[in-house]
Length: 211
Image (tube, rainbow, N blue to C red; front, side, top):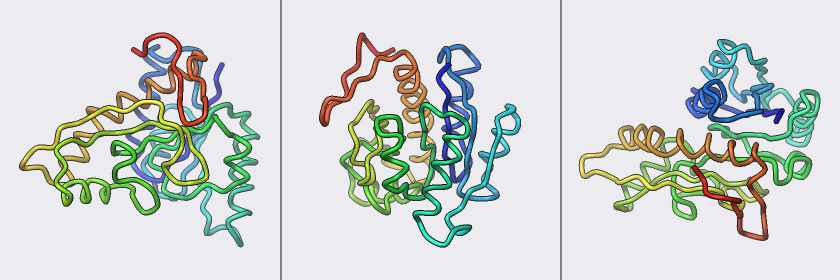
């Protein structure tokens, strides 16, 4: 079984999408073995508890420096023998040690079509605020492998979402989640679990057709 560890900071809607996909059988031979939140009151921890998944609060504020925080996250994932790490609305920056330990095995979901509206400081509602401010007509979501530079890893899947004339950042955020994020993140996990993803330089090759 593919052992999945999830890093969260907020409500955990993408976490729920993956849980639902595993419980429905869409994702086979995989399970979430731990959920770690950078925020103590994150609703994502309650979601994990409802599904019998061990949850833990680990914040950088608990440590003297970022390296200690990074080491604690690495140790926790190793303790649970995690094979794949998912970032589901995780707003803390991962350090070099963690990323090197799980190179090619960390997947992030970002609420835009990378390379638009991404990188340091672009997360949560701000992404949609900037998309509307710029006046783009199409946005969406991207699932990608994680590297040291934020939102710069090889892209696995993208899905476009049309922007409406009367959209607010909140309505756009909701539609991007429903139409794109909750679709392509479970799909990427399914592809990884089936051994159908291969990284070649900047490209991610998918064996067979994605579903």
